[in-house]
Amino acid sequence: MQVERIGNNVDEIAASTNVVGIFQDEPLSESAAVIDGANDGLITRLIAAEDFTGKPFELVPLWSAAGGAAEQVWLAGLGPRKSYDAETAYRVAASVARQLSTKPRGRVMFGLGEDLSAEMATAVICGALVGCEGQDLYRAKRKHTAFNTLLVDTDDAVIRRAQCLGESVNLARRLVDRSPRDLYPQSFVEAAEAAAKEHGLELEVWDESRLASERMGAMLGVAEGSARPPRLVKLSHNGGGKDAPTIALVGKGVTFDSGGLSLKPTDSMIAMKCDMAGAATVLAAMTAIARLGVKANVVGLMGMVENMVAGNCLKLGDVLTARNGKTIEVRNTDAEGRLVLADVLSLAVDLEVDRIVDLATLTGACMVALGTDTAGVMTNNAAWCDEVMAAAGRCGEAAWQLPMFPAFGEQIKSEVADIKNTGNGRWGGAITAAKFLEEFVAEVPWVHIDIAGPSFLDKSTAWSDGGASGAFVRTLVEVVESHVA
Figure 1 (cartoon, rainbow, N blue to C red):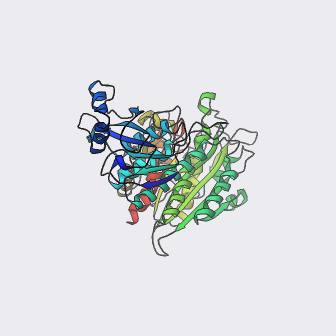
Figure 2 (cartoon, rainbow, N blue to C red):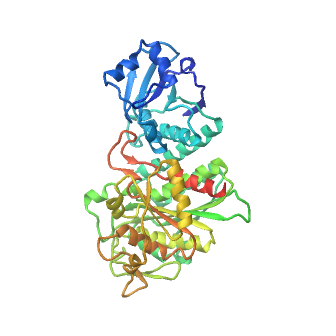
């Protein structure tokens, strides 16, 4: 989909469809007033009759709008102005695009607010790009068709950046939505190879023999029960110069999680193709960072495995030795993502990076604590966490910091090894998982983002088809850009 800049004069825009945003409980904007006047006060009458209120996600078509070049005008509710933030702008734009994209359209103008800041305009453009793409990978007839051209009123530089971000979010979504029959460690490598070649990223792939020689014992233990061998993917963007600091983005890449011998019930296993969303998010963010030419040194590390059941799979009571030499007692084979991350985080430390952010669909406990729309954030460095949280806020991606009190670390002490891979019972599971990861980051400033909730939608919403959301791709790019600004 092309994205082009427009001016403010709605009645002169050559578009087949104009979308005009209307705030709740306030006078019409200049653009809406032009359309209202050209149609004998139709919008005013709709509002007076409460057939349109301006609430978020409300969408009403005016099929025979007079005035202007548009064949059709849609009124989109933006909600109260005081609540119109980046999150709302993204979701409103996505919800409009999702509805309009159910049939082919030519030039579509999105006027979702006037004089928008760069952050808000970026949210609108990204939302529109995401809303036009559904979970259609395996359908004979797709439900959504991208517009030929999206018209927005913002600077060309904002358009270029926002289009790159939106396309990267959709890349993450497509990877996560692929069937586990099609997306497994080696095929993920192939996707990374294609991205690296297209966008100028350096790529290194470790097979199982290299993983063994690099002492990645925890990751290899998880992979033992699968016929699909594990892979480690390393992508590098060297935009900051030889002596500039390096940020590591680390992603959990369990391409399917059966739970292993701690087998998941059917209902809990259905969506487990999404357990590689952390890796997909890192890959997508790295492509955006390269495309934008961000002047930073960034390494993306993705540990790719399947967690399956076989005669040689990981057993409860097994003791694994991680890359940093720590021994791990396996108390639950369904707590496998942290085992993979243990080795990959240790590798990041050995690469002497200056900052780490990891993303993982790590725990159901995080969803119990925060629901399905909010990511849990945990850290060993308050200042670095503040940067990451601020970036998420600017992007409108919901995140909430959870405490990392030392008492939670006591729960992962083992009687037979250095640590164990679960805490003591159900309580605080998202935090005890993070305390486990903390054992593998040494003193490097590190932020862990548990995206188990927001990364995958069990059912469709106003703004997205069910399936992968691409959550936190934009945040990762914002983190890197803002850290070097």
